[in-house]
Image (cartoon, rainbow, N blue to C red; front, side, top):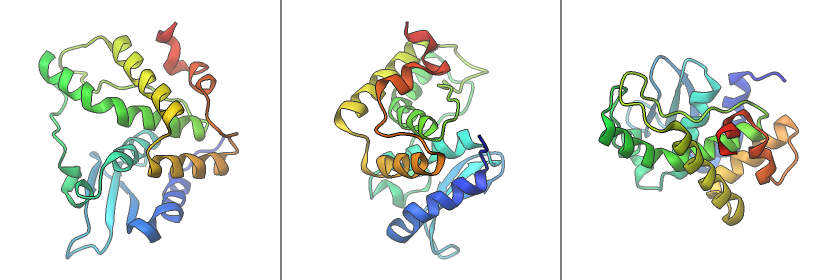
Length: 183
């Protein structure tokens, strides 16, 4: 299956630009969310170097962010870069459960591999299997109660584009490499 980041940018724009004045933009080394300002009339979800994983992750944060947070750079979220200690890593993983569950669903809908990421290569190495299980538990909650509205819209757009049957079910997630630790 062909996965071109340009398709992803267009799909996002087709789905959200008119209603939310937001575009998905290919950027450089670091992802960033920038609300509209005097220099740019629309909000920008900037993902790293054309990487699908980065785009999906940043869109997942956007789908979770409320209206007030979408007016703040990087949604006003706390972020400490790679090299976190144990306590910092636990705080990081706690706020990453929901976006990574959403991101996993995006990958399923796009028929792409997903890897849960604790994003701390140079710091404390937490229990990655435990983190994966928490992300999977959140996926199960979303499957039962529904994904956030914008996340669901994007899942549907991705599924249509990549010809993925809906609705997503728990089997979609348990039959993936990311679920290997769940048994």
